[in-house]
Amino acid sequence: MRKEIIYFNEPGPQNTDAVIEAVRKRLEGSRIRYVVVASESGVTALKVAKALKDLNVKVVCVSGYAGIRRVEGRPWPDIRDKVREELENLGVKNIRGNTLDIQEQCDRLSVFRRCLSFEYNA
Image 1 (cartoon, rainbow, N blue to C red):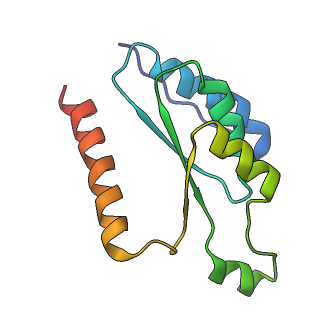
Image 2: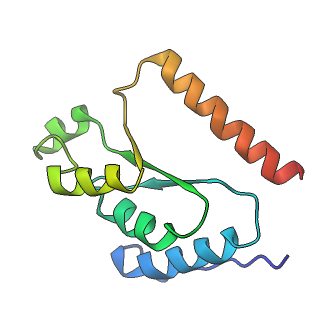
């Protein structure tokens, strides 16, 4: 297997397509089954989910939490109804910052650790 590192001159949405293509290449032929995407508005997670829908992976969207929205003066919820509905239709699970109780966070973290461990120990 060949692994590649991609560097960008600047952060931003102009890099999203290149990142999605790199993720897609990495997933093909691997046993990776989860892709976690940080996406405050859900738009990036939606783009990732659409691009990977023909692969056997589950996409998890981690969005912002209500507290930061209040501090920044931005509206809540951060993922609007139309985008949320599209994410749900594609089977994308959304984790909102601190809205999960501690046990649920631990359970989800345990699943991710097992997946990562399985991938890197195989």
